[in-house]
Length: 266
DNA sequence: TCATTAACCCGCG
DNA sequence: CGCGGGTTAATGA
Image 1 (cartoon, rainbow, N blue to C red):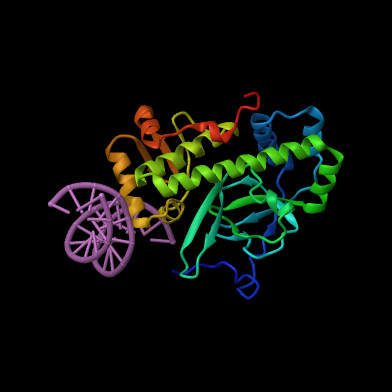
Image 2 (image 1 turned 180 degrees about the vertical axis):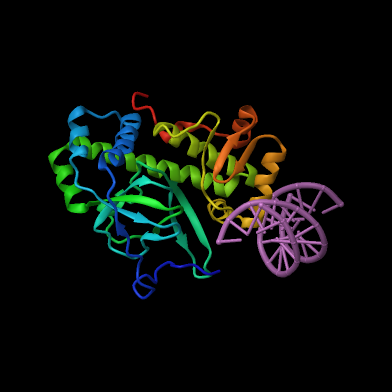
């Protein structure tokens, strides 16, 4: 059970990865964020301008690398520009529970703006391009624009709604349904940032990571994936999910997307 | 390194 | 017993 970083030992552990600065057009980084906020809450032109003017420091991270660790004080919030991240906790035995999966356009550690010491890890799952926004910058923005503050507040509440669904998933559903549910949620979120490709979408997690998300071993994750394939429901190959039978897929996952609150008018 | 599979094991209803 | 899991190990891509 070797992990590169664990819970609660971050101040004495190995030094953090020092990311490279990256030169990436920052418009593309903001675009996914704006699209998300537009879908979940609606957003005014003025607020879009505010977000477009935020100073963002962009850095590259390899896969399976800590971004902010349990116990650390964050000074920035992290906007995912490209790649997949996860929030997780690791228990003393070394086992890691993945708590949430994050995609481009999301700010997984927005709550660090108010909860100063991290109570979990944020790390990359795949190689990532991440944008960092200073806390002080976001605080000023909150004061200047209450409507942006509301947007971020709503975003955080949706985040907690997703955690409730995650608990139900891991705690009560059989493993095949757990996997299907995580897949469909991911698909609905990728849809918002226009990252679907016909009947397939990205899910670039290793089977180890899938196991950690579902609370099963990697071997069992493999069995579950195989079962879904054999039953003609979905195919998962090289980080891409292809839906074979949409009806069976939805039925198995028991998916009701209300908790994602993607329609601001309802 | 990751994915796959087999063989074997265990607890629970 | 059968089901849903875990462990271990071998092998392949």
